[in-house]
Image (cartoon, rainbow, N blue to C red):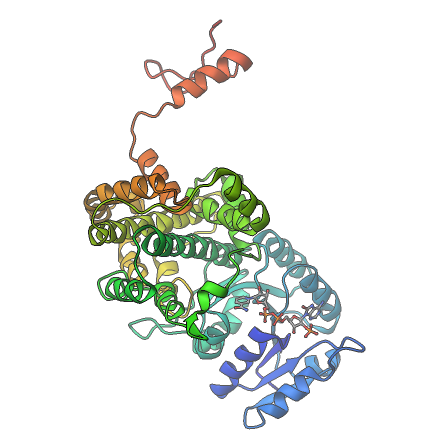
Length: 468
Ligand code: NBP
């Protein structure tokens, strides 16, 4: 009997997804490459360990392909980049017209765009599928963001919807996102928002612990109250758990080196924003904050030279914690607004027809940035109005703005670097400023480079130059 679905790559994600599928009664053929001298028969051992599941293991590519129902549906769950192209080279001659290849890795959307076209020329459907939720999500139900040729998607929609997480109405957190590289673009932006959200939480922790003198236990209590009062999210939940984790009578967190690493998707979001002419200040700030954190040795040396110490924020800590909560609420709205705006601009530029409300919906469960805010955004994004101009959001931000400004000002004064809190605030203040100083920029450009400028007292399609 042939298998309904094939997975290539028995790493962390590939194994979990195989178990998710097989747990739903879907027969899965699994394959892993064999690197001579390294672990062999990876797929076979995985199937042995899970003998009760309908798994068919292979180390031979041809036998793997032959074991699949037609049209074949094969998910690549391997490292993004050259590995995906190498696999396409290897497997494409073994496949037939109408077969579907899904790339579930974190591939760059430009690569996916190219691969869709290359495979289309061979009458194969190539789908770039964003997958979020980590190992546990893959096993229990991830959020899935498939993009590429629609005909390919219809061949796999039923299976993907079956293994995806479910939203509060029981609908799958999986929806066809758009053509070409749209799925991987959306996953990239998901990760960009994730970077900003993680950094915002790191700043909250830093302020509470080192500038407001909260003990880890009190921070846990404080954050738990946030979690229960509208700010609930997966990332806040795991942050609370992390702040409880003890090792040898102390906080494990205190033993972890403060040098953040990254795999690139946050940086890609920033590059995409530069390409599209979009502003993603807090996402970019979060990426840069990780780079700066990684320069541990330089930071230590500079700290000794400059002798800057974390200072206590003056005043009543509990009142500042309330301001911080409001600032956190505000910066999260901006983090999300810029992410969705980036997708809107990409959708316009590439003609993808992205449905932002539907994207928010498939991010309400299974993925790392699931939150109560995301649930709210599903409704808000149904309108064409930009998120930060939506009535409900305008009144919310009016209510939060003063506290946000206060906490950023007090934090900076107390020597806390607040990359995301302050970049978000700068973005927001810039966004709500009708008259910016960019007229001076235009004048300077015209002065030294005769780059011309438009005038507010003349039609806007006319350009002027003066001898300064
Ligand atoms: P792992 O490192 O656990 O597994 C990688 C898999 O890719 C292994 O099966 C490996 O085979 C295979 N592989 C590599 Br590496 N190079 C290959 C090649 N040239 N040909 C064939 N197979 C190759 O990674 P993972 O965490 O499962 O992630 C897989 C993809 O999913 C990545 O793109 C990742 O960014 C993405 N992703 C990960 C997560 C997560 O939370 N981990 C979440 C969402 C997306 P081997 O065993 O022979 O080396």
